[in-house]
Length: 63
Image (cartoon, rainbow, N blue to C red; front, side, top):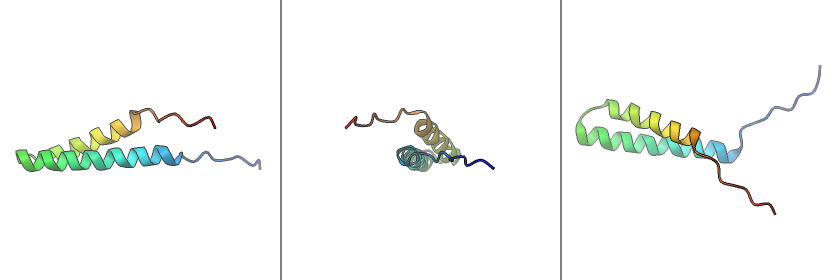
């Protein structure tokens, strides 16, 4: 067997995805409460995940 290094997700990437999901959950809950339409919650979570997944990570310092 060969020793293969498994590439784990970068901590910044995971943080970005979680932040997107939480923001989408909050926006979906607020929209759902204001309109009385519960599917806004699912739409908010989906939108938050998409934003978190598609947003470019910030550049790292070259120090």
